[in-house]
Length: 458
Image (cartoon, rainbow, N blue to C red; front, side, top):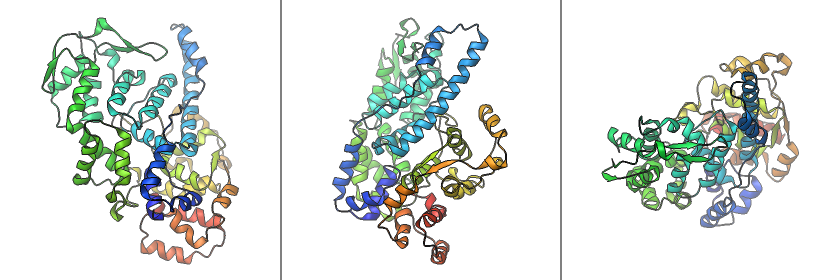
């Protein structure tokens, strides 16, 4: 398999590839390389932090005790920061690269957030578990997750007064897309999801007293449907397969949709809805490796940071620094902007973020200083922390493992590093700049290459 195609595959299915792995895979054919990607991501290992004290506090809390509630909220925020850090570390170090990349994708598709880390951790692991599984099982599991029940008000959805929030987003954002259902379908679907609730530990609880057991007519079918039955009917629609496939195409292939390729994907996906089978088809398709699809996507902030770590391992000395970088670049894990998620693509870059993104390699790998006023306000808990920092402490403190980098690139000539780090076409201005580089230090060259506009693309 061509080295260029392997790099392309590993950026789309993960966060880049190391020189040694690139050399090993270049001796294999495409089908073998793709198959091994899926083999490595077969297992779903839950991402867990210790929340036992929080669970105990929730179960035993006196709701009238304001001080106890404030203390619990503060501890919850700490645990959210801990889980944010743990998820970022998982993305940087996991052997299940494809599963983690898909988990990140689905987190921006089945968008959800919650202030209770117990519930959001459970939700995050449901995404991970089903990331390469069956879409029907996936959607049903999502509909019963406590975080989603709270986020889209399913808990308030009762037969006497149906709440349409979840039903609307299920059809519009999660499965069918606009134009493939009516307002009446939303109302009937909402009736089917009445009675969905949860207990304090986050386990699904179906309240029969609040469920509407009467007949419903949904997408042309009539019956005494519950939530699972509605999801079954939704997935009978070929439009669902097409909608999901277009979303995957825009995120893994090209922002500009190709209807012929998307229809091919939908044919593979429908009616079994096997996500792994669909992604295998995409990564084995000749069109996936066409020049127009290589180096055409803008890396999300998380992809940018994790990809840099793949080249030069580093650790944040303070987890709040990692959160701060995410905040500056407009992608905080666990904190999507709204139910539609991050728009991605060109919206990742504006006049503020492009300067920070280009400086990020120096910030993370070379102790460059970053101005605190460069981007917006922080959440109160973090704003207080940074307000205490003096000028000297404005450096983002990281521990950089240059020894591992030197090991990765020991046999790589400086002149060849460009081809390993940059996958997008290089414009003339960049070519001229590269010709002017006379540095003989691989570490410096690495930082310079990752500071180029072309490194923003994958």
